[in-house]
Length: 330
Image (cartoon, rainbow, N blue to C red):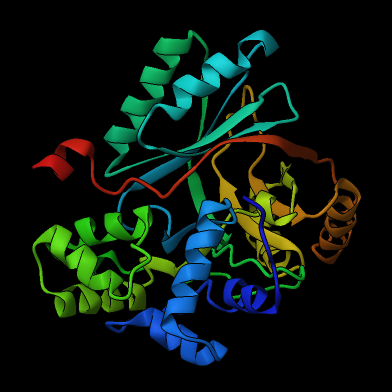
């Protein structure tokens, strides 16, 4: 299906990636803001979702605030790429998986309710593929919001302020799982989620408001698929900095125009010694490299060695797993 980005669609996708209205009929509120009807908002979002431009209307969670996650990589011989990618994507806790230009060529994010679940996922992948998996846990986020401006300018806040998991209550994980899977594109999406959970709509809305204020939900709104919208050059850039410099550089790099994610991860000293990561999304390779040059100069690391890993294929992009399949079925 073709993607039509007229002025109203650009506003819808640009202005509603966060601050989704926590009211019974949120799409009506969005329609009022855009000068159109609730029905038109629903129709446009349904078409954009069917065309692959919208991943879901839902939440991005702060990593490890209501579950566990890690970035992982695997070095796959070229003839086995499709086979191994299929095995990785079949793991329900894997929510992102990309092919990147590096010997470590398949990169994925493993999520789950706890670290034991992550360990199980990585062990199953190693056993099924016969290949070693790099486990690169998050140490410190500097910019994790990934609100994405369609004109390339910076959007949103860094999301680096700590979350408060103490605000979680019994039943919140099920609500969060519903948000990461995506709300139904219907007039009363919170009522639809509440019906699935056997709860009251107002209770669900209030719990979402609480966990969002606590920083557990880092963003609630329209989650885009960047490639489908023309932003096809996705580069993960990594540096190996002295430990004492990572925080200082990470804060500056996170604020640079064009940087869509930035964080510190624990390195694997034998195979992957890099500790500072950033993501850049652009419409072309040249644009991404230009953005990288400016960002690295702002952070004072333009002359330091780095690795630039462009993605060449997206195998999987879904929301994080917060509740295991066994818990969901209980």
